[in-house]
Image (cartoon, rainbow, N blue to C red):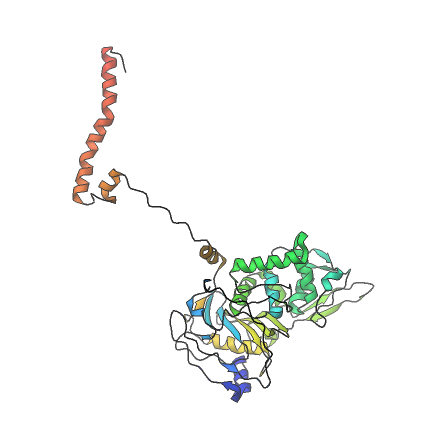
Length: 407
């Protein structure tokens, strides 16, 4: 059964309304998002920083809403428990629909996608890294692969631990390594610089892993930008779609090693799945990024602030993917910006001052004198200019013949 049908069947009478599609306009009229009522109170989420009203809404005015934005005339998207979500085309960058696309929320472990996008180009997968005690400084009870202090692992093994097991320990190692002399802090600074380059201006990383920290936020739109960059990389897709991996032994503490499994059930339970990332923290709640392919189209879905009711986060993502695949290919409410587009928006070219055209150019049609009169004046001027140019030469030649002094 598809994700949408599963969600609809389980949600049943829990749906709160079915708002109509947003009418086309420069900025969408606020329409509440289809939402699944929760059986128990949802913990409040931290308040994001105030948005600068002068900052442009990247992706187009159709994304300037905290509510629902979908193309006119399309079916209403399925109700989910996520407080923000977005569905976009991975190849064209067109946004097919969204709920609060630029609203900021805690990311949880989907922030590891930003770590991957930042560090994959920087790190040699064959390099062997020694884990330090500081790398294991993560919140008690949070997800970890189980790498050992003093253990030596290849960077490739660490990537597999990050994306399959959502290891906060491996996130610290990779960020520290990519941060160079500045270590972990340098790695997190690089993540923020990469988010800025991509146009993910709603995103600010404070931890390498996505563990809750004050001031740390992202948005459904930004996650789609980051995921699009990740899925463009062969190495990311290879790591992200691995179903299992072997962590090598570290004698004498771990003489046998152990196996880890991929936590993203979309890979094994959704036809055409391309990968993604799960996440959960107390403040972020459930977060999810997933991508899939169907009939030549590749879509990505991002969710923030979801609850595991009536189904888990990946199943809510699957329902939204089903909805997106059912939309016409030319439907859009905005687009995912490219780094080149972002650079042009931030650094528009300086206009060049208009230069005054020479008199001869104006006579030929570049200003006053344009037309038949100007053309006649230009034609008449040509012989005179030729004669003026030749006169001094003829005078000097005649003087030489007569033996007169030249001046």
